[in-house]
Length: 281
Ligand SMILES: NC(=O)c1ccc[n+]([C@@H]2O[C@H](COP(=O)([O-])OP(=O)(O)OC[C@H]3O[C@@H](n4cnc5c(N)ncnc54)[C@H](OP(=O)(O)O)[C@@H]3O)[C@@H](O)[C@H]2O)c1
Image (cartoon, rainbow, N blue to C red):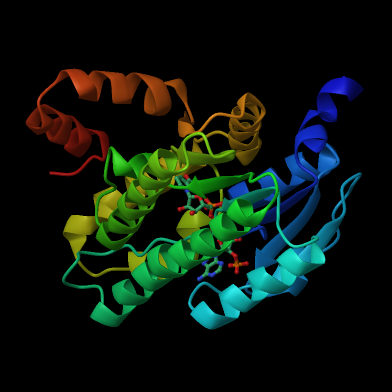
């Protein structure tokens, strides 16, 4: 048991994880720390991060993806403290905005794309340059996308766009880094029981009754979903395999069966089943 627990620590000395204050990010940090990896974890209010058990050491970092320059400066400072480059960088932070596309204020979804796509791409850029400038070159990048790339979530258009863009970036980097010593993982979780819905619930109080069944289904799905520790175990296995690629994580139905079935039927069938699944019209 103790041998297994040290495995991540023998491959990665240092890791940078965005969105460490709860949910999946917290589970990733706990898993890494428990196997001896030193972790720099971020939150917009770092005092929310608290004290973490080892044996790895935890350093709290203030990072708000809506502050592009501040995010880059925070990553640069943490990298310096970690010896110039991280072994592992997990871009996990993100949030949803629930509402019909035309009802969400333009500034809100633009800010969402700035945070979840543009700033996240800039942080990928910085991490990749660090990996490339090492001798020998190397490092692992994880972009936490979503199964929403394959099964877009109802009334979360900005989120669906952001995750599709992030997966497209990962796919591009998987191609570009082949044989370079750099590993890139496009990590796509299905539903996990986190505070994700609470973080966006203000918009869920939409007066449009057409949207309410979808919101209720989103809430019920997350309530019944697996705990984030399972996603951490899926990511752990992928990190230990050490290959670039797409990793789906979640219940057997969402992460295995649905993608297989969807690949066998026309898109119109997939849309019909999705409408039924979300309890909408
Ligand atoms: N839960 C799911 O079912 C699910 C499914 C697929 C994909 N995902 C993805 O998994 C990732 C983690 O989500 P979660 O479910 O763990 O949600 P969560 O519990 O709400 O955690 C989100 C994390 O992101 C951080 N964050 C949010 N907005 C940020 C911003 N503007 N700048 C910097 N940090 C920000 C939050 O930190 P602070 O608020 O403390 O700053 C928090 O640590 C997200 O990218 C999400 O899209 C989740």
